[in-house]
Image (tube, rainbow, N blue to C red):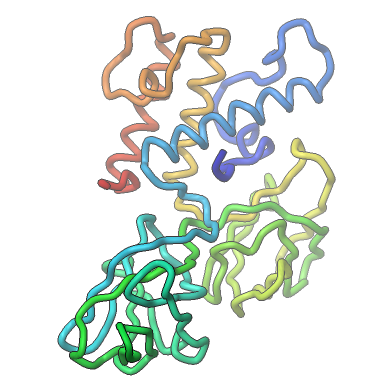
Length: 293
């Protein structure tokens, strides 16, 4: 399973006109209804990840690929996921069992090219073994290498982990994946929803931000989790549509995600579910979230 694109609270606050109080027929236990809704949110999140060929929730991933050294002596690394926010380590060599790590100093000289969603390692940034002698990045003794690197990609999507008081200049979240200085985070808390800007790239789950205007109270349990994210609004809306489609068609165990994420009504799919599924698909396609592999 991939990351969750929504919280239970966030879905219930959305203007869906979909009831979530009877998802488990005959059960008067709220925890049962919450668990079922969380399951539908996870199913919708996984469906979006599959449809887009990429997990759009920020996480650390590993890529192995052949990279080329261009005439300027630079290497460009192209991960298979969108919204690249960091490359945390790179190892280079001529074979998978003969890789040498690029130093932290050399790695710090690189940068993310947001236009091409790639990481650029400049000339002279490091060396790696090429046969009997080391190859200096930026020389012409070879023009390609095998690279294995760890990177962070996707949009930050986490939850508040500790109560944050008004005027506070930090928030503690469940995960800091994808959060860097300058990220605008939305704290989804009903009428107290607000945006804050990250003032320093975090090294822990306590994130420095501009002063809060509201107090956001942490309550344990998935039903009360307060979302903290930097996902585009339309992407979040697509997941709301897809969750609604799943809730409206519950009980149909043979229903596939492909039947919902279709531009035309599918045979055997409830009309409301079909409309919501088609809306989700349109947002994902028109928004450029679907990657071509």
